[in-house]
Image (cartoon, rainbow over all chains, first blue to last red; front, side, top):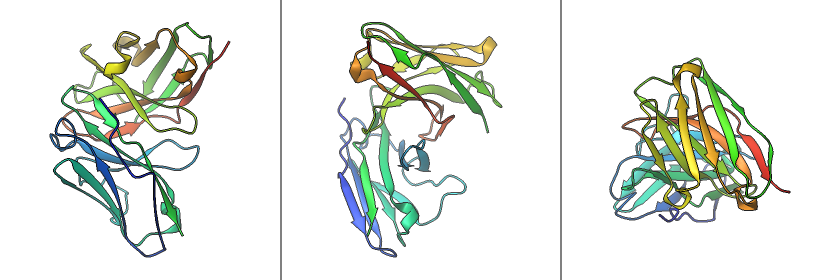
Length: 110
Length: 120
């Protein structure tokens, strides 16, 4: 059970849109719609931003959106803001009846 | 909105067993809609899903940790626990207790996590 693959870093200027990818296999990302995205600021607990591929919890900005195609899930942040600078992790349910995290992506606002 | 208090030693010696307990308040651990999970994060590294337990006693565990991990639930105390045997320095991490919703990838981190250091 290998970690899902995310780019180590993604950057963008304020106001721009960026996309973070999360690539798995047909046994995890490709098999289920149980995929979440977390935002983590330094020293803080992860915060749920997207669940079940594209659903936003109450209170999360609609600038955050999620999608999935085949074995790759994606998180898009539109209208990038300074406060969006953080680490982002995807997580997917697997055919082993477990969850597996992505490798994590550092988002930098230029 | 449930909250949790994690308890357990902050320092464990190599080859010994790490034991943590998560006591939940503001919600029932016997709610059949939820699973109770442990997630960890070594310093400066990424998140790792360890395993989960349902109030019925059903458990799931990351394959590479099977054999070392025991996750259990104590409904009378509204708490769940993690035991990790034969620890090494690689098990040094912040450990989080998490509430997962069944039939969904929705999850709720119940606290700020607790740092456990493995060192002699």
